[in-house]
Image (cartoon, rainbow, N blue to C red; front, side):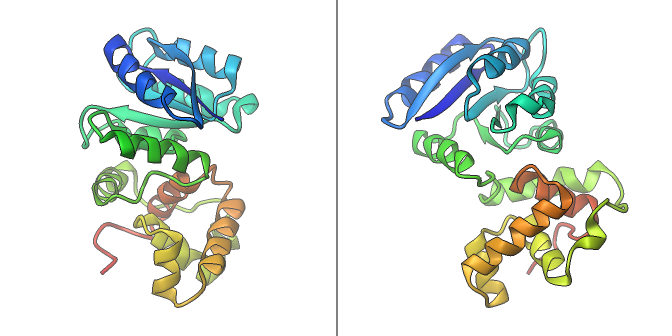
Length: 221
């Protein structure tokens, strides 16, 4: 079973998500939080696979709560997915920099929400849709100037190339097709880059790619 904690200050939003998720044979809602502090407490108590986290909440907002969950060594297996009302929310990129595994717009289709929850548990970041790539590119370029990143020199040329493609939101299959290698080989390069840089997941590898200056919006044809 995939365990989920819902964090949103609107009861109706939580109720709608709970009804959808609990109707699935492989997903169970373990708790609901009306603010970030409750979300952190429930994450520690239940150790869910996924926390669906709103950003704007009282007491403790979703950004602070995301950072608290990611930084807690007891919660290494917990993935945070940010819920936002607008697909160009200025706080989304900061949330991903803090360790969130992706984001969903609240009015997303039910099937997409379910796919997203399962994808995050499988280790994939929610960075494939074109709107997400545009958002990450928009806020990544504003984040800070490229700088030296610990571990970057340890990457091979091919690993850097693959990291740049990940930064543009390409899947392992798309990377394999572009580089004319097998999907397994592409996946291995991605995994090695993550290990060498200490990236929590694919979403954080995207952030590293931008921050290291390996990729900038518009470079990929």
